[in-house]
Amino acid sequence: MSSVASKRARLCAGNNVDLCQAIFKAHGLSDRRSDSYWSSDGQAPPYYPNVATLEADAGAVQLAEIARLTSVLAASFSVKDGFCRLDLQPLGFSQLFEASWTWMDLSHPVTTPSGWERVEDAASLEMWEFAWADHASPSSCRVFPKAVLADPAIAVLGRRTTNGFTAGCIANRSERVTRVSNVFATDGSPIYRNAVRAAANAFAGSRALVGYDAGEGLDEALACGFEATGPLRVWIRDSQDKEE
Image (cartoon, rainbow, N blue to C red):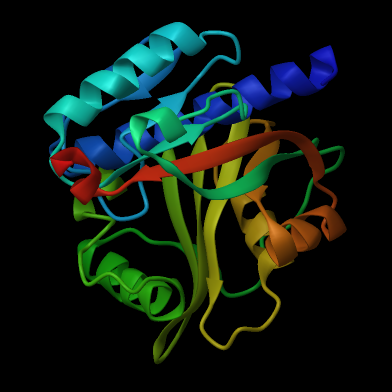
């Protein structure tokens, strides 16, 4: 990986952890963050890891923290290896998926797509999450509590109609990048390009847009102008492994 790609991957991983911290805080869960990893002893909200790596060459300290968590967490939990550097099979993990960080420099202004807005209140957020969950989430648990609306670094965005939200995404900003995630359209129509445009205008200031995707999602991101900028891998450890 080139030095530019490595730097971009670190910025992507750091931004991803920023969102993890915000979501855990919204759920009232404690966490810890060092230069090399982020982790939490709390029960993660659906689709969120308990560990995410922040540096490519800090495997020893990262493995030590993951091993510690296997001794204190009874439930299944996942690890996001932001650089595909860890082998977690000896700790009882299996690979859930592999993906690519994506990056887009915004070389010119873009306009927010018609009909898109920022979710501002708890009732609208619940409506947004209902639409998102119907498309993308089999979990019955709330993933995005109303506390996320108070975080100035998170923007929940959606296209609203008289019947509710029909499309949406989340944008979260860091100092140098903004990530677009949780993209959905209730009718399954292509919506990624509009979500990117909405995310690009969610915050003041110019930042590169980032994300991560795999398969058809990655193809769609690349078609919208993103570049693949480094691999990541997610591992999961089932709770029954702890009892062996």
